[in-house]
Image 1 (cartoon, rainbow, N blue to C red):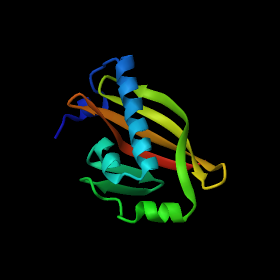
Image 2: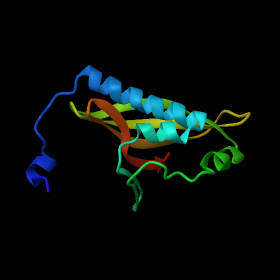
Image 3: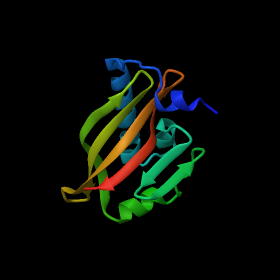
Image 4: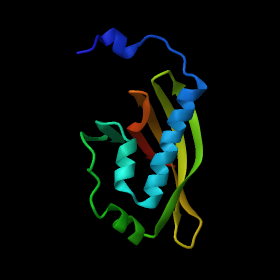
Length: 141
């Protein structure tokens, strides 16, 4: 078990532009894979365990391959066409992790954006590679 004091107050490090840029690129790669319907490429961007929080509910995936095989089939059947970022705002950054508040829109086939959502995404560096999001906090706007 890690020392609690270090857990809640890790050593101060400054995030350089490269940390933020790498984390932002990771989110972009994840979204590109999502829009392409490529589950394996999406999983390649995630850090595991992958923890998602929505309200009081928590879901933890310990390994890749957890999306249902018909995930994109069902999403497309609902009229979804693609997801676009409206805004990515850095709210906390250090050398090994960057937290974003991300606003994105879901576009439907033949129509403009249906609605916006916000999420808190945490991207972290593992062995020099950016992985995201290791924690998703979702709420509808």
